[in-house]
Image 1: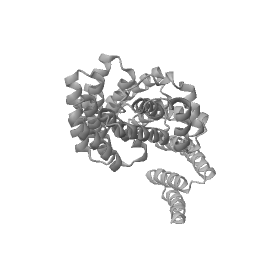
Image 2: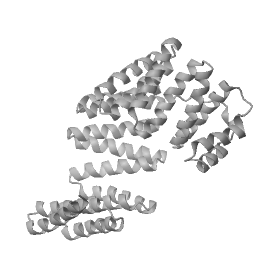
Image 3: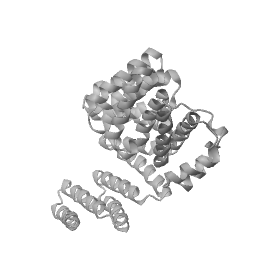
Image 4: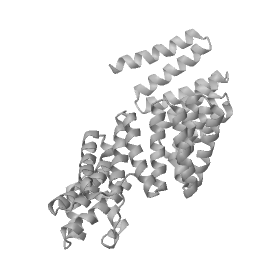
Length: 366
């Protein structure tokens, strides 16, 4: 959500944060009713341009709280006011925010259309913030489409603007986006170069959240290069920072990555320690699907340690959860993996038994 152009106004003099959230929760699937109530309570007596500006601010707040359907409706309403009154600067800003709000829908053609409209308007306005926002978000759209060269191209344009303005945060964001694109293009050395530049800027700014992402991205690049000790060090740094900032979901991702690197390094006990931390977290969350995935990962580690009995028990626990969830796809995946474990140990009859179970479940799907 950082790519939204955050032109915050004094909206909360008109509607407090808590009231807005309560209203959004009540009408989260009814955008027209939400807008009607909002108009009645807070916007009725305002001039249209002022209404539009307030709606943009509300739309940003809703997007940050993941009320995507409502944020799109609010931005569209704001846009109608700006178009009607010929306010091209706010029209362009609104197109950028709409594009970001639509990112959860995956409608990349619509996103590109809005961003191209904003760029066209900006030829007259000449606002570098709008221009950079368009390029950054076009880069994200192309990244989602797998057009990684375009991702690099657009983020480089945004980077040039951020550099001219001395905008460290904007530069760091662009360096990260370019690094991820190079990683996807399998040029992991070049990816590292950009992630390190982003990390340097995050350290200068004291931006701990950004630094945590940099370390995680560097860990991914080093792992892809087979430089596992460096990957381990980066993921450990990311875990430490995620703990410091209490990013509990980001922490789970980093712990899983660290567990996988430790597994590749044959540090079995450490791998199990990190996977078990994930498992305990998702037990508390009541997320049985993700629990089953970590049980299977732990089962695989036990097999690699030669502890087949413990490994099979863990896989069976994963299979039981898959059956409870009526997820034949997961159950088949776990039987397939369990069969692979026995095959790798040379126990071919046992491997065949589990592979046949996986095959039967997959057959029933079709």
